[in-house]
Image 1 (cartoon, rainbow, N blue to C red):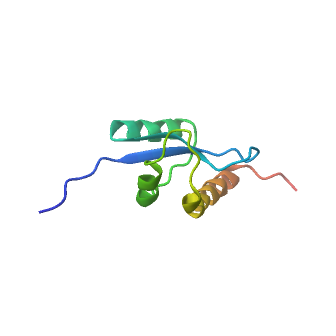
Image 2 (image 1 turned 90 degrees about the vertical axis):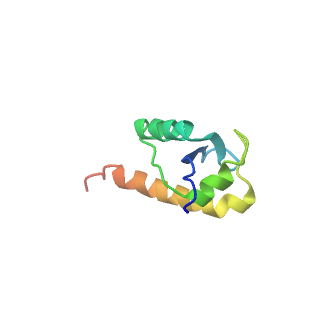
Image 3 (image 1 turned 45 degrees about the horizontal axis):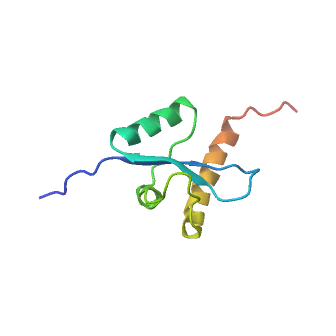
Length: 95
């Protein structure tokens, strides 16, 4: 017998490179709330990456809470990925 399907989860982070501190959780939820988080990200052109284990850990944090040090590496990898996508979308200047 298979396990029941768990509802989709999503967590949104905000990171201000100019400000001091770690990224913060700005939205988190499951089911319809998770779907809406992903929809809003798509509408705003924000890249979405599926990392179930990371979402599970982040969903335990309070809203506006900075990510804890034990999640720095995992979140940094996602930020590098997102910034890489952003750089690819930017037009290059003519030489």
